[in-house]
Image (spheres, rainbow, N blue to C red):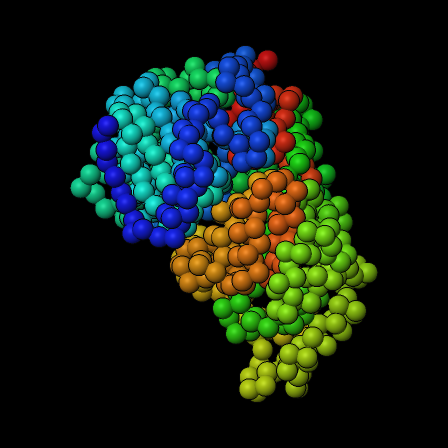
Length: 607
């Protein structure tokens, strides 16, 4: 057996791994074509194609998308630089691929099979012998191990948390890779299957952490970068020699010849480019604009189609986050005051004609969302050990305030004023003043190009003035914005966290204690709450779907009652305007318009 091994110092988790092996009687796991978080994969080993893909989709054509902002790097796996976010999914491939018609199920991609140890103590992947990089070289076990080690130690923080839970990684024969974990965790096996695999030789003698636009990545994915201009566009072309084009997992997907990513200074310029035909598809997040602004000639003539894609996924959390590292927001009463002063109903009417429903919790609009009223049953049992330290509303039930829709929002302002007084603040000469005699103020950090966020904040600033609060609003370009948010150098800023129907280890990255002081982490609110970590632990070790849902609902309660984010709206549908030559299947995945939908299962066909 050929071996290349990376081993960590023995920990308690390794002992757990050994115990699990003894309890399982040493029985070998069976290789499988797929792996599911709970139960078995929905598709059999001989499945023909993903259920939401059209196996008869023709190849050819192009899709041109728009993006607000800029980029100065083509390496999406490091913290340095700004990268088109799509490259992480279009230009790289992983051992397993995700089906977006199941909560969390993976099927073989670079790997032809997967085996999982008892309770998720280890996972073993076996590479397909035909797997190739875009330069024709084979994908090897050495490439896989190098990718995991490099991303886990030098890559973006999104990869590091899972890597700290890896006990060892080693080659098994010519095409096998086994990863053992410090503690048994079913989800880790799936997470490891989704890591991008890079060509190790491309980075030999180079500083991986500083790579920008000087190295076009060698791909194993259906697309390769064909052309680019920093800050302007990236063009990806379909690789005619792509090794996996006949895999059932790929049948009917990735059939468009060119994907071009165009970059614009702001949303207005991007929309004008779509109206003019310079880009061929655009997503509209504003319900009112969808109703009023998409009646231009190309829509009336049928050249442009307006599609609404329903989904069954959680809302996630979108809004304005308060950084609890800042002394202004370390008191929950101040955060609640900021929420009370935010007149959602008036802002929604102004921005959306009142059409957009508000986000009510991190997992609302799904079976994982917290239920209204008092916590009961298994949810309450999970939270009770932390009852003395939970914020008001966690156990009793918490709801965001509802105003009458008038601009003055007198009830909300009164409530906010009372909360500020409870926190030790008073209004002196029309200025909200702290116990130290200093005016209460804070910085709202925005990224250039978001007209909607700016409009929301303008209304909010006027409301705060009624409390004697004058925040500073700072708008900067995307590179500066990334630098400052990575360093947590803000008091309040825009916040967007999509969550799935199968939340797992990534929840540690979003709001786990270990990420509070890790620059570049996604824990923007700076929360460190033992109850949150415990609910994530309970979620990851649940033995049944019922226990799993209870843990997520309990987590939802702690996060929502934490008053970390001022939420705005969500949409139960995605709104996509596109040229009529672009088509998608009638059978939609449960995730709707999510990763793996556009452009993956779309095709181009002229009438």
